Length: 142
Image (cartoon, rainbow, N blue to C red; front, side):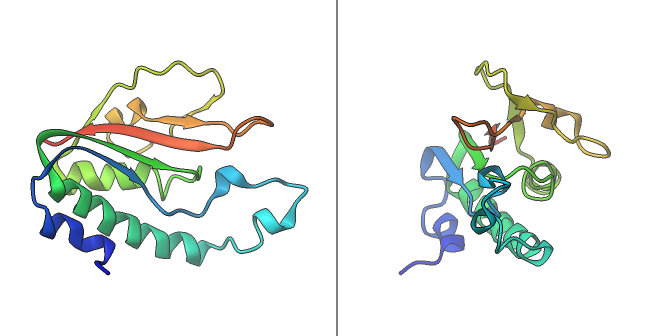
Protein backbone atom coordinates (compact mmCIF):
# COMPACT_ATOMS: atom_id res chain seq x y z
CA UNK A 1 0.00 0.00 0.00
CA UNK A 2 1.25 3.48 -0.88
CA UNK A 3 1.61 5.93 2.00
CA UNK A 4 -0.52 9.07 1.69
CA UNK A 5 2.47 11.39 1.47
CA UNK A 6 3.80 9.59 -1.62
CA UNK A 7 0.95 10.32 -4.07
CA UNK A 8 2.45 13.64 -5.12
CA UNK A 9 5.68 11.89 -6.01
CA UNK A 10 3.91 9.05 -7.83
CA UNK A 11 1.59 11.37 -9.80
CA UNK A 12 3.35 14.75 -10.13
CA UNK A 13 1.21 17.41 -11.82
CA UNK A 14 -1.30 14.74 -12.86
CA UNK A 15 -4.67 16.08 -11.66
CA UNK A 16 -6.78 19.12 -12.59
CA UNK A 17 -8.64 18.96 -9.26
CA UNK A 18 -7.89 17.44 -5.89
CA UNK A 19 -10.12 17.07 -2.84
CA UNK A 20 -8.16 16.74 0.39
CA UNK A 21 -10.56 15.80 3.15
CA UNK A 22 -7.84 15.57 5.77
CA UNK A 23 -7.90 13.37 8.86
CA UNK A 24 -8.58 15.64 11.81
CA UNK A 25 -9.46 15.83 15.49
CA UNK A 26 -13.19 15.95 14.65
CA UNK A 27 -14.23 18.86 16.86
CA UNK A 28 -17.10 19.59 14.48
CA UNK A 29 -18.60 16.24 15.47
CA UNK A 30 -18.52 16.74 19.24
CA UNK A 31 -21.82 16.52 21.11
CA UNK A 32 -21.49 18.00 24.59
CA UNK A 33 -23.82 15.50 26.22
CA UNK A 34 -22.04 12.48 24.66
CA UNK A 35 -18.54 11.98 26.08
CA UNK A 36 -17.76 9.30 23.49
CA UNK A 37 -17.70 12.01 20.79
CA UNK A 38 -14.77 13.83 22.41
CA UNK A 39 -13.20 11.27 24.76
CA UNK A 40 -10.09 10.76 22.62
CA UNK A 41 -9.41 14.42 21.82
CA UNK A 42 -6.15 15.90 23.12
CA UNK A 43 -3.76 18.73 22.29
CA UNK A 44 -1.17 16.08 21.46
CA UNK A 45 -3.53 14.50 18.93
CA UNK A 46 -4.05 17.89 17.28
CA UNK A 47 -0.28 18.45 17.04
CA UNK A 48 0.23 14.99 15.55
CA UNK A 49 -2.57 15.54 13.04
CA UNK A 50 -1.13 18.89 11.95
CA UNK A 51 2.05 17.06 10.88
CA UNK A 52 0.01 14.54 8.88
CA UNK A 53 -2.14 17.29 7.34
CA UNK A 54 0.93 19.20 6.13
CA UNK A 55 2.37 16.06 4.52
CA UNK A 56 -0.94 15.29 2.84
CA UNK A 57 -1.36 18.90 1.71
CA UNK A 58 2.12 18.97 0.18
CA UNK A 59 1.48 15.65 -1.57
CA UNK A 60 -1.88 16.83 -2.93
CA UNK A 61 -0.27 20.07 -4.11
CA UNK A 62 2.50 18.15 -5.92
CA UNK A 63 -0.09 15.95 -7.65
CA UNK A 64 -2.02 19.01 -8.85
CA UNK A 65 -1.37 20.46 -12.30
CA UNK A 66 -0.36 24.12 -12.57
CA UNK A 67 -3.50 26.26 -12.18
CA UNK A 68 -5.28 23.22 -10.77
CA UNK A 69 -7.90 23.56 -8.06
CA UNK A 70 -7.72 21.96 -4.63
CA UNK A 71 -10.38 21.86 -1.95
CA UNK A 72 -9.07 21.39 1.59
CA UNK A 73 -11.59 20.31 4.19
CA UNK A 74 -11.78 19.02 7.74
CA UNK A 75 -14.56 18.26 10.21
CA UNK A 76 -12.82 20.21 12.94
CA UNK A 77 -12.97 23.81 14.09
CA UNK A 78 -9.57 24.69 15.58
CA UNK A 79 -7.21 27.13 13.94
CA UNK A 80 -4.22 24.77 14.08
CA UNK A 81 -5.80 22.28 11.68
CA UNK A 82 -7.52 24.84 9.49
CA UNK A 83 -6.39 28.44 9.23
CA UNK A 84 -2.80 27.72 10.24
CA UNK A 85 -2.53 24.89 7.69
CA UNK A 86 -3.69 27.32 4.99
CA UNK A 87 -1.23 29.96 6.16
CA UNK A 88 1.57 27.37 6.05
CA UNK A 89 0.54 26.41 2.50
CA UNK A 90 0.48 30.04 1.35
CA UNK A 91 3.93 30.70 2.82
CA UNK A 92 5.59 27.42 1.79
CA UNK A 93 3.81 26.31 -1.37
CA UNK A 94 2.53 29.57 -2.84
CA UNK A 95 -1.10 28.51 -3.08
CA UNK A 96 -3.73 31.16 -3.59
CA UNK A 97 -7.12 31.01 -1.91
CA UNK A 98 -10.22 31.46 -4.02
CA UNK A 99 -13.68 32.66 -3.10
CA UNK A 100 -16.19 29.92 -2.41
CA UNK A 101 -19.58 30.54 -3.97
CA UNK A 102 -21.57 28.85 -1.26
CA UNK A 103 -24.04 30.75 0.87
CA UNK A 104 -24.52 29.34 4.34
CA UNK A 105 -25.83 31.24 7.31
CA UNK A 106 -24.41 29.05 10.09
CA UNK A 107 -20.80 30.20 9.67
CA UNK A 108 -18.20 30.81 12.34
CA UNK A 109 -15.65 33.59 12.04
CA UNK A 110 -12.35 32.67 10.45
CA UNK A 111 -9.34 33.15 12.71
CA UNK A 112 -6.91 35.44 10.90
CA UNK A 113 -4.85 37.32 13.49
CA UNK A 114 -1.22 37.30 12.28
CA UNK A 115 -2.18 35.17 9.27
CA UNK A 116 -2.59 35.90 5.58
CA UNK A 117 -5.75 38.00 5.08
CA UNK A 118 -6.93 35.79 2.20
CA UNK A 119 -7.66 33.02 4.68
CA UNK A 120 -10.95 34.89 5.22
CA UNK A 121 -12.08 33.27 1.95
CA UNK A 122 -12.37 29.91 3.73
CA UNK A 123 -15.63 28.85 5.37
CA UNK A 124 -16.05 27.40 8.85
CA UNK A 125 -19.50 25.91 9.31
CA UNK A 126 -21.11 25.92 12.72
CA UNK A 127 -22.36 22.56 13.95
CA UNK A 128 -26.12 22.39 14.40
CA UNK A 129 -28.65 19.68 15.18
CA UNK A 130 -28.86 18.86 11.48
CA UNK A 131 -25.19 19.13 10.45
CA UNK A 132 -21.69 18.64 11.74
CA UNK A 133 -19.15 21.44 11.96
CA UNK A 134 -16.92 21.71 8.93
CA UNK A 135 -14.09 23.75 7.43
CA UNK A 136 -13.55 24.23 3.71
CA UNK A 137 -11.14 26.20 1.56
CA UNK A 138 -10.72 26.40 -2.21
CA UNK A 139 -7.22 26.98 -3.59
CA UNK A 140 -5.44 27.30 -6.89
CA UNK A 141 -1.90 26.15 -7.61
CA UNK A 142 0.14 29.07 -8.93
